Amino acid sequence: MKKEDLLKFIRKLNMRIFSIIIGLSITGMTLIGQTSEKKSKGFIMDKVVKSDKEWQTCLTPEEYQILREQGTESAFTGEYYNHKEEGTYTCAGCDNKLFSSDTKYDSGSGWPAFFDSLDETKVNIKRDLSYGMIRTEITCAKCDSHLGHVFEDGPKPTGLRYCVNSVSLNFTPKKTD
Image (cartoon, rainbow, N blue to C red; front, side):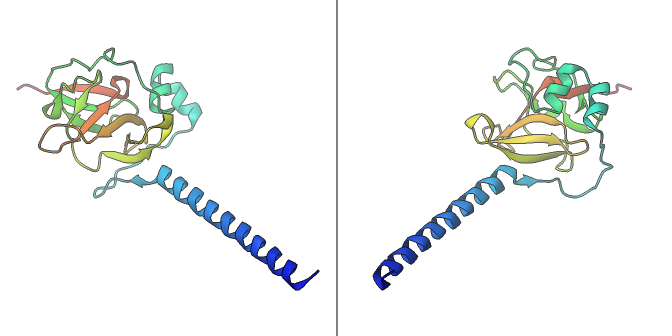
């Protein structure tokens, strides 16, 4: 092989290696973006850890599909969409206290909406790139159950809209003395 041919071959090989490195870098950044999470800060609560089999025995099929498989109930159909009673909304998977009726509002979206969680230790957030959209998923910090998504189009004071599946919630009325 001539020296010129050898140099051409090395240049082509270097370009291929460079292309592979760039491709792997982009893939790595994409994967990191898909899995970036923000865990709650502060108080550390006891985690609820169950196998899929255990979750299937303690949840209804609809609850399992939404809480454990990141499903979504149909808009305007949920039990708590138009719910006006005062009290606390808890996780249907573990009874972790998540939202207060004081922060609930009608967003017009078809799902229960809150402008804040009870505190930042109750809900985890992570990037969700499913269905070709960029969203922020919210999960229960205690049992990692899917609750819904949070958007930055809510009312003051937070500017947030926690859009939550009713199936992901239970409700405890405020005690009146």
